[in-house]
Image (cartoon, rainbow, N blue to C red; front, side, top):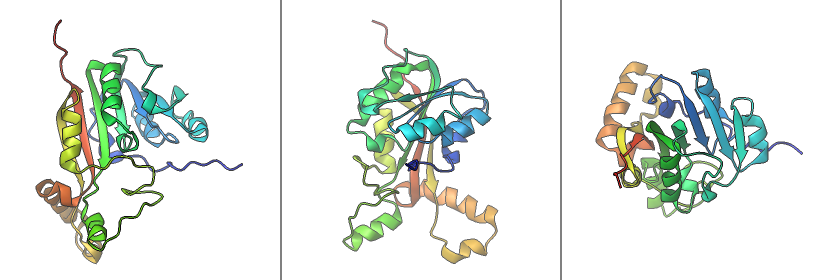
Length: 223
């Protein structure tokens, strides 16, 4: 039987580039076939992964110290409190019935001085809005309307989700840009990239494809 590596991709470099360069222990939740783990391990991180797919588990083992097979809706029972310097949630929370529950688990297993990196697709990106305006609401195999998505977010509601569940957002990136169409192939890349970043920050709910956040756990109050 051929392996079903549905969530193999090039990794989320836009998210990973926000993470400080000092490596440590990382937990990649929903690690897929290990694409983000490959990039993290290449930067010196010691990565543990978790996926629900046995084929992905076997593929990810090449880049992880350990890969657990499990359902994230059941939490992270294998992980001790405060053991990770980084918890990665790249396009994961939209697949979870109760994202706040997984964020609570991330808060539990990340060190007090650690970081949680979150990426979520923006359902109100201008291309998706155009489909809605044409009366199209159809699920697809991948993308923002992935048939396995249970929750939908904008940049603003994604920020709210993270900040209201035990974290302080220390970096926020609306990753996307302007609809350049063919002009992107004509204009200098440094010009279009700078304008993309500026425009996405001005209208994140319209122009960003993914909402990216780096957050640290809020200090626990003394009993």
